[in-house]
Length: 379
Image (cartoon, rainbow, N blue to C red; front, side, top):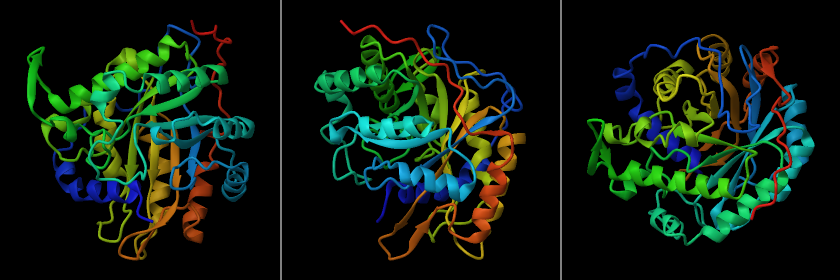
């Protein structure tokens, strides 16, 4: 099965050399450990100083939402550590809140990270905007669904991480800026151009968040979740162009992958992480960063174990604003008959590297989020 992960990785690696040539280390990003979220409510990310949450997506199927308790406990037994964050999808095509999945994650003892994606079946990448297109969202066509989802999230009551419209700086999702005017200049602000695609994506993000907040779903921690390399690598499509503003974001997220399909070149974790980390750190000096997706395929003789070891080492020493890391544990068949195996147990060596890395006390296996007070009913 060809998934969005393989397509995104192909685009990422094709652009890697160009991105690395332009890599600049921006002052103020490295070795900062103090993180905060918005102070207007009970939502606090309870990780100050050193340490980060363990996390994973555990091959939850085509819709990324077939969460099972057995899968979570099997992953924990295999890796030797409990998960503090469990990621899964909630696609708009299902027109419902993932009540069953979120209760399983809660019962397991983790905080959910939900990829809330305005995407319709058959969930194939590379297609143009579908019925959940951004103009229709902004016109109020999907208000009833947003309200229903928000009410269910509020009634759940416990903290939850939500990433809406992730990886918008790529070309593989129908909400990407390239489909909405791309780099067409629509105006200027503070001397800088405003671009049609990113501006519409930001407008839709703010619209959804505002509508959910009206329903008093204040237990949601909102994430701004970009791909590590922008595709196309044009000035208008850089991560910063899509940032909706500090008032709409509680955490900064990245998808960072190594080689995922056979045609790609092998690269180290540092090479795929450095530039993206510095770029996203520039958006806000204090907000926590979450590696919302990370992983690498098994392609001998390339050393997957070394990639994993470098990732765990770097996250502790080089990227200390990262306060959670979610490994993408999945295997799929590509259209050419080859396989992309990102699972931690794709080889004994890869599993040993993951187990050794996550065993460090730095990796916190139980969420320490404050629970909000029970929200008042929405009007």
